[in-house]
Image (cartoon, rainbow, N blue to C red; front, side):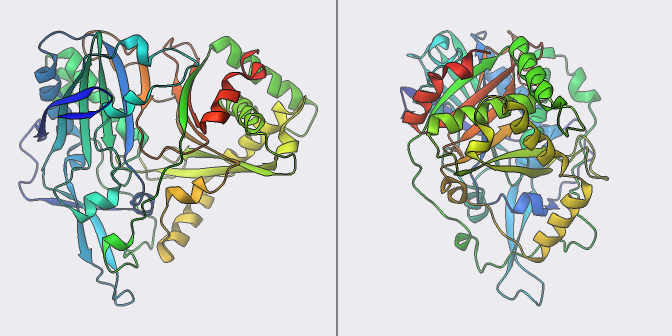
Length: 455
């Protein structure tokens, strides 16, 4: 079967988790979803993948078996969503959505793209070809689709053999877990595949699967909908293109030093980080490429991890633990000479404002008056920049046994005009790689921006 761009599906199967011991209950377990989880039930699956050197001939079966063992350490992701009427008397038309850990499995797809070479989809500062989208499974799926149809998996992987390499992709319901959990699973899978002797599998403790709820939160949380179908919204995606931009450790250090120097004589009371300086640089470049008027208000939204901000959430927590930080300013205030530091300072203050107290306040408010996220809400703002990913994710450490990744790419899910995804650079010395998604005519201007490249 062909799935687009010369990519052919060879096989598809459901891989069940292989457990390291027999202590798990044979009966299905229920994991109730938190406000962080449920507010993402209406968005597309998270999709990440790594480009690897050409594997040995036996790699496909080896990857499937090592994936089953990794899945045993993250077995809730092999479950399914379960919908039930809300028991609350105050919500007679409501429903609840939970994660039922019945060990149903995750989908494993084997595909080939014999006409695609590693060089076709790797390298910095270039438009990423659309064939990459076909390397990802479950394209176009929302988490609500999995809640409506219990046969649909929360997790799927696709291994696509190229002419001289292989692409390993993962798609995960964002209502089941966030990017931190996704890359933890990716890292566990690659380590089990690479070691091959089972030491990782038998020695690794199970991550904490119990979800964290703030005090007073109803469990399960009732949602004010008669049926799941009423929650979903589908829409036509406007055309976008993506490019990958690499920034060396030296260029990032220059940006950081410049930003901090510009703020040294002002009111800055903390150091601007490398990531804040780099995102400020990109934010300004995107505003220039879009040709926004000086009085137009622009905003940048970036994720803030809560595993180190909120007490009671362990580092290895499986699920969603993300808050959002927002910086807003007129375009004219962030462009021009000497404004890099000010722009980075806006991001610094936005992140600093996300503390335990504000996170708790937002969660308490949401549990009393739930609201869902819809991609069109962000697509309606032509002056927005949305950041995802993190340079802290161990992307290039995913050596499955025949070499480190040659590149990293994201799938088509949740793509919007203004999305910037951050990864560590493959050099491992402090560089970063940004995947930038913009309207085609804007991306062309960004790529040609000399101020962006000349640091």
